[in-house]
Image (tube, rainbow, N blue to C red; front, side, top):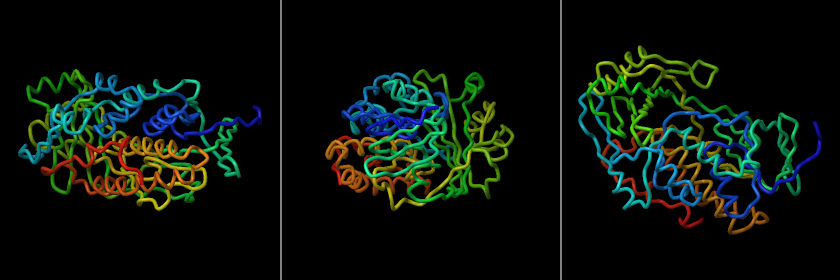
Length: 381
């Protein structure tokens, strides 16, 4: 193993949805960018995800909008329904209405399918898997990054896109475990044959609500309707497990949601494999950057998934950060990072707050402030 230090202009730590977007946008703006991801290889992780028009506009800039539109499902509405009676609480128009009003599609898609398209859009010789960051040293003219595999990189700037357990965040703020939010989510891709055998209609995007904000968000993740997914939100007393998720069961789903509307019952009946995940919280950050280090996404504003905007906020961050660096160049990074935080803080905090409250689109409301927003043209600062 060599001790030679390689130099890069910008290092993005983490090749998740936000990191991959940051790498693509920064490279597109003419910066020299390398991305370092701790996972040994790319894997199709996660399950369903919503991508609003606010982020499809960014994917247009990266050049992957059409590809994602072809894979994903295009719901005409976000429906909110009473979990027991089936009564409609809200009907939020998307589909053609959204394209007209908000300037791009609203899609639901498998996270892994979207992530694969994002990774494929990057120069493959600049995405480095199997790189777990173990040390960061801030120096006068760069940041020295040391990886577990022995590689050392001197980066002019470092973008922390490394999630809720961010090493960059820990470096800036010291170690601090995220707090358990008091909520868990069950996630399942359901058996389509069983679902169809019920003879019932399954809407392309629907959130079922019960008392105490318990809910099931159910939606298609492929344009041809061949995959249907749900994620729950259930308040619980604690999370005792050391692992990031545990196996759940149809019996547990039945115990929580049994006796509900027939469509919900059919969802539970079609469940074969289901996992249970804790939702973690952190307080809104008072620090998004220091020196040559800057953070985006869950590293600085993790949120519960109840608004379906967590990944979208990370990708918006990436777009605004890129614009700010374009304004100043890498030498003006201090000014760029201050401008980035000033532009993003209020919006990210508002989305974080509403997400955590779990009220989004339960009643009729106008979501234009989220979906019509264009991170590529919004005023900076």
